[in-house]
Length: 193
Image (tube, rainbow, N blue to C red; front, side, top):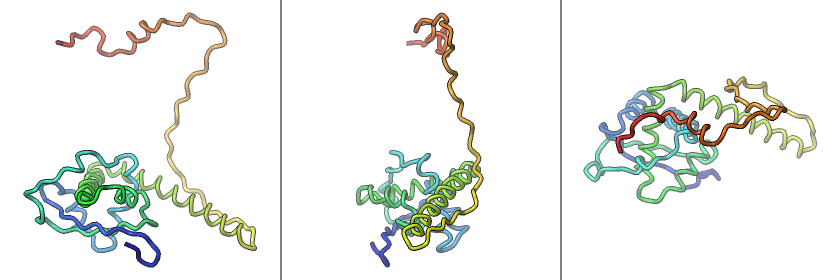
């Protein structure tokens, strides 16, 4: 579906109290466009770390046509990851998969909001950086050559542990069997098989 040159998909699905309690609670607390934006912003941010799983494809024939209706519009320019995932899903199961995925992200927001807030902050920083680069390219392509820069956004990045460099002296290298025995936490336990 296209509207003013912007590709979008309208997802119409049903939420069931037995399976979508977190998403029902979230939708009841928000209204209209705010609900659409809030739910999709969370999903867009969490999609890379918490992608579609096989369990998202499950549905019950007893629930067809019942439940609370939910209509979400996924625009390609605002939510490119969600738009791409939705478009890649097979017809006939798209709504079910999206409702289950959105519910998992709503559960994550209810249970561990700090994880979702960190993911949204990283997504916003990445989109801000991309918009600054796009603006620089547009300005450079025109008659002006000034660069527009936004103030830097602080991002808390966990330090990456670097491997220790090899020692210059030749030390005794442990055998592979000894290294495996040291790393295996199940050594010495009976497996019962």
